[in-house]
Length: 296
Image (cartoon, rainbow, N blue to C red; front, side):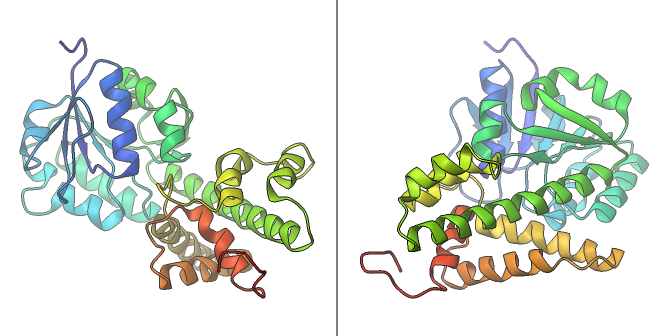
């Protein structure tokens, strides 16, 4: 028997499943809905529509792919905000900051409390409680939802109003993506000049070049193992599309981001969109001449 209340989750992708696992483990009853045909994680009650989430839950977590899907779940046909929703919505999707601020305003006009909550970290980090939640919106609402937030993101920061958390998340993802690319290039460089990649990764982690990317993505690159994904190529490209659009609006060139997108676009063209974004390592490897015995 659950010792907590009932939480709804819209979207059972990598992050949605990580949230569900944490909530179930904490004793919550979890109702979930996904437009795709998916298998329910252990302890989760899969629903055939959004209706039970609106009627039976004390809060709803949105873990869908992008801004358009957030808008559809809330305001589309049979959407949550159209169902006289009276429980708070926590939007964990990485969205266009200006559009998410507008969505928050539309929710407020309908009496729906809305909190922006993008996460920094892979789905595995979030599942372990190591992800960092970036909170945007009313601090009083965040305090009221503290019991749920403590489960989803024991580590979190309140950034400011809705939109600012997304801006911070995209800035974080810009640096994070470039760290991945730098690590991938460094490991390829080391391999080509005769160093053992696993040993080089150990050296890098103990050097001035160390970053938090290395223990997460480094082993995937060294082993050239990109399934199952912790964070996918197509998700990273979506975020970098938002990053570059914000850069253009602000008049800020992002030359390194442009190179990063070109590399991941090459992965997408090869059908690697659902693989872990550590596969940028292969995008760089493919640019050089083939080394005997190496994966092409």
